[in-house]
Structures are given as structure tokens and as C-alpha cells.
Image 1 (spheres, rainbow over the protein chains, first blue to last red):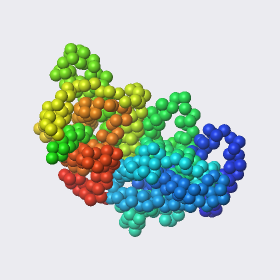
Image 2: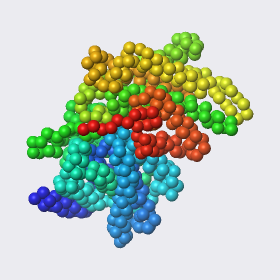
Image 3: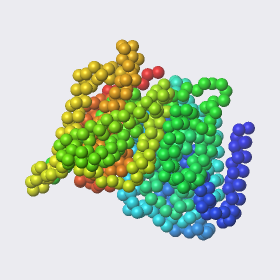
Image 4: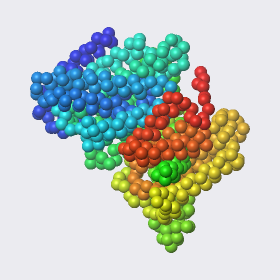
Length: 317
Length: 301
């Protein structure tokens, strides 16, 4: 039953995003850009939700994975020299996004391995450090444009690519966490020692979470690069990671629909508040503190994931 | 040879600033078992208190830096202590029974609030910090130049560290701090008021951060509301390197980070300045997560 519903969701969403490309020209480009950002942020927040919310590994380096994906995809399409509208555009972009995801997941593996020994605060700061190291390396690589930025990326991404990818990511994560295998993620999050005791390899779960989450972040980065056509290392600083983390926390860690809603809301909100944009981050941070003090489970979550009366242990660290 | 000596002096000067900030991290971690992410931003506020006060205080004392500078230090330290205690009371204390992750996220929230609130209040563009420590060249040989700045930083940091050592090991409240960091419950059964001890720890940590900020701003006079982020993160790395929860370890870690950073900037490339501390962090956490002077704490069911 569950699988059927999610398959229908995926089919409808992909169809809808394909149809949406027909109207791309007729809507205000400014609104169109916001809509695309919503899609990209949904992918980013949902993939981080897999690491932070479902596997309980608090990561602050998501922008780093996004950067790896964005630069990988950009290098592939520019070196193959495809332009918008050429017949190769679709297969090349698909290939580029796939490789972007793979490259990011290699980095996810590199970050995931030390994370096996770390928890909570240490893990957060190590992942933040990894994200910053990736940014500093990019800033020093001349073939990636270094600090000047990477220009001339063909504008290949459109609403079809962004939203069908978002739907696919949601579909995969939904089915993963509802599978027997995915239950192990929640077990590791809720009590690692107990999970180990019933035969779950927490090492394996954490690495899988990092690799999968990083893969999707890489794809999101690839899409982002092929939409804005220009990449700069500063776009992937830890502030971007914080932004994604805030989306996950406000949506409710471990809530798929909550995170989609908060990613949408938090993409629109700053645009709607553009006249008072200097207050944006102040409002964000206050919101974060107030939510933690009053509703630590997130805004859009009535209860934790568990539906059948079990009282989950709240300790995640 | 003299270039090496020069780098070592610069490194020790930078390292003792990191050490002062790291002491705050390590004390708060020792007592509350969580990383006060906002510590670097308390440091930033300290620099801004100095920025706004220094010209007025200097005018008050007729431009005599000998009296004005200690007064600015004192007021900045008091101001940051109040800020630290307020943050603890409003944001961290209500969450004490909650899972650690909740407190961590709150700390990140407080940190962002201070950074962007600072941009709103102080303005986002960098400002020039007024001179509080007269910069003259004390030693000047062929290749070696040692300014009064570096010497003042090292001496002030050393004095503050010895003072901290005295407070923690030779006073009643220091004994209480050590008892609380050992075991909250047992300490409170012995009649120690946990809340007071925690507030006092924030006072100590935040005032050291304020002193570090004024020293830092005297060496690197361009200050802005985001200036606390990297010194804060590096000092945290220093605390972990030395063994978090260990005072001597934090001081040692600060010196190592300061020296390494100066050497990397001097001999390899300044662009790696901000990546070096994180690389050290990852290496320590991989090979000796308890740090140089820390002790292992096995996880219990």
C-alpha cells in the first residue's frame, strides 16, 4: 500500500514538473527563480534530514557536499561543451548530475568514517570543518576558478529537472525509512547501544546515511550550478550549511513532510521580507532559539515519527 | 634563523589569544558537557565594547593609556560576563534537562543571533579598533622585529591564565567548580549551588574572551561582527587538542594552534589560514579524540 502511494506521488510529481516547463516562459523570471530555489532547497533539506533527522548524526557540512556536486557537474558540462538546446543537453546533464552525486558521496564517505567515532558536538564541528576545508581547497584550485568563481556554465536545469529530482529524492527517502533496513536508521538514532545489541551495525548505518545524504546534496549542487550558471566558493560557506540545518530543525528532524514545508517556507520568507532583509538572519536565529525552547520537535510535527503509541527516547546525540 | 624566531614570537602571541578563548570553551564544557558555540561571538562583543568605550575612556583620563587601557579591559570583561550569564540564564538553563542536541542547536542559534544582531547594531562593515596598547618596536635587529603589542599580549595572557589557575585551584568557588565538573549530583548533595557555579563559570569564560578580544583587536585592528567566528572555532579546536575540560590542555592547545597557523601562513600559503585548524581537529579526533592531556571517558549504558 505504502509503496503504491509513493509511486503514484512520484509519477504525478514528475508529470507535473514536466508540464510545468511549458509555462516557464510565461511566469515572471523572479518568481520562477524562487520556485527553482524551493525545489533545490527541498532536495538539500530532505537529504540532510536523512543524516540529521533519521540517522541522528548531526552534520553541519552539507554545503560542502553541495559544493563538490556543483563543481563536478559544472566541470563535466563545460568540458564537454554542451549548450542549451543541443540534443546532448539531456544525457549530458543526467550524466553530470549522476557523477556530481557520486563525487559528493565519495566525500560523504570520507566525512562519514571519522564520524563513526564522534557524537553530537564533536561531529557537528568536525563536519563544519570538513565543509570549510572543501571550500578552502576550491578557493585554491585554479581550474575551478579559485576565488574568482566558475563562470560559463550552460543553463541546462529547468523546473522539470529540479522538481522531478526533488520528487525522486523524497520518494527514495520515504521508502528507505519505511523499509526494514531503514528502521535501523531510527534505531541507531534513538539508542545506539541498544541498536548494536540487537545486531544492527551502527557503523554501516551511519556511513550509508552520510553517503546517501551527500549524494543527493551533490545532485542539488549540480542543479544549482546549472541554473545560476555561476559558482563562487563563498556560496558554499558554513552559513549555507546552517541555512539547511535550520530548515530541517524547523520542519522537524525526521519529518519528511515537515522538512518539505519548512524548506518552502524558509525560501519564500526571506524574499517576502526583502524590504527588511537585514533582519532575516536575526529573525532566523531568534526563531531557532525560541523553537528549541518551546517546540524542540519542530514546527510542523505534532508528535515524533512514531505513530503506534511508543514513547521515543528523545536523546539523539 | 631570525625569521624562524620571528614566526615563533608571532605564533606565541596569536596562540596565547587562542588559549584565552579556549579556556572559556573548556571550562564550560567541563561543567555543562556542551560546546558553547556562542563563545566566539561573546569575544566579538568584547571587541566592540572596547571599540565604543576606548575613545571615551581615553578622553576621560586625558589620553593616558596607562590607566585607560586597564579600565577598558575591566569594563569589557564585565560587559561580556553579563552577556555570558544572560545567555546561560535565558537560553541554556531552561534546556538543561533536554537532550544535548537541543542545547547545541540553541547555542548555534544564539551564535547566529549575536552575529547578525551585531551586523544590525554595529553595522556590517569593518571598523578600525583604536590604539590601546602603544605599538612601538621593542627589539629591532637585522631581521627580527618584536613590537610592544606582541609582548603585551603574551604578558597579559600569562597573567590572566595564572589568575584563572589561582581561582580554580585555590579558592572556594574554584573548588566548587571542580566538584561540579566531576559530578553534578554529588556536588549539589554536598551543598554546592549548581546554578551559581555555572553562572560563575560563564563569568570567568566570558571575561577571558573579552580580554582576548581586546588583545586580538590591538594586534589585528580591523573588527567586524563576524570576527568571532574563526577565532572561536580555532580556540575550540585548541580546547579539543589539549583535551577538552582540561585547563592546562587548553593553554597548550592554543599555543600549538597559534604556532601552526603562523608557520603555515608564513611558509606555505596564507590562503590555508582557516583550513589548518580544522585539519588538525580532524587528525586529533581520528587518532586521539581525548586530546593531549584529556582522559578517556568510556560510554556507559
